[in-house]
Length: 488
Image (tube, rainbow, N blue to C red):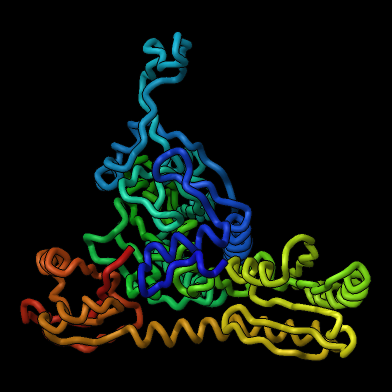
């Protein structure tokens, strides 16, 4: 099976698509730019969703659901917002079809009085609702999250990383003060950082976007950025301080304790199924998918090895209590006792699908009281005693999780450089990776760098090099280095 996966060094883009295919994560759909998420892929998303959802609830948020369709007039109420999304919107103009000789066509008499937009994001429809929910300071804060799908009419798409329709969560909160809203924005950025590093084992840099890279309608956009194995950056999540822009656009006011009417302060924040793409490109290898145990739908797979019914009975009876002990530790374990499939084929399949640990048990193992244990991340195999196996596996899964984060951290560190001159920058960016360099803070210089090198400022890091210097391009004063990279 591994031979069906292109070597990363030969063709990274094809390698990525091969891993998605061989791990049975997703397929292209009949609709250009959309995808069918297969059970293996959706199970990873469910694990991500469950973990994030609990983190949201632990920080006081509640789930709700808002309509898929947005009146066109809503998008025009916030000028920056409509400008940012106008070219990505799918527009519904008619409400029905009619039969014709060769099938169906749009019924011209069903044209809508006002066109509807298939949501690219939900700020407008949500703030229309908040206008009805908020009258007094007693109604604040509102801390809402929505799990949903959105549509953005992308021209260049790639499974998980950029699709016309994708799944995500979007948080939308309303506050009485600016300070509360800023604190919320930073709190959710930290939630995303913790999730990326502790669950995905994917190291990230946190920071604020430049003005040109902000979310449409935001005052400030904060992000988590990670670096994939090919040296390109991936924006993995964003948290936006929206100020009072949407409150003013939708006339959302509250009466404070002094009886004065004021506009509320807002945030929004989100991550999407793009995280699955990030997971693939952070950890996977030329044999297929590699999953951190915390997000693996199946953490341990047991493959019995036998040649006849007698051996099958012997091995399965030996494996049964081993499996039960592992389950009692809260570990997800699967017995692969399919017949008509050779053990080697099963090994390759589970390897391609990223199962963190594989147990193989044959007649000799039964005789010796052992099992064969194989790690997916390092491909190490060991023969160990079956006695106390559940505790050993529990500890090993924790070690795999931490080892994967450490390996990714070391890789990113090796692909990170600090440079001082523009010539050095232009040469260095060809090798990919994160580059820290001084920038004079102007949009003109930022655009010049983008046009000439295809690199963008990923963020102004929260914890970066804040020593003053000179812009690598213009020589003008710079208060700190910013993070550059080519990106997805």
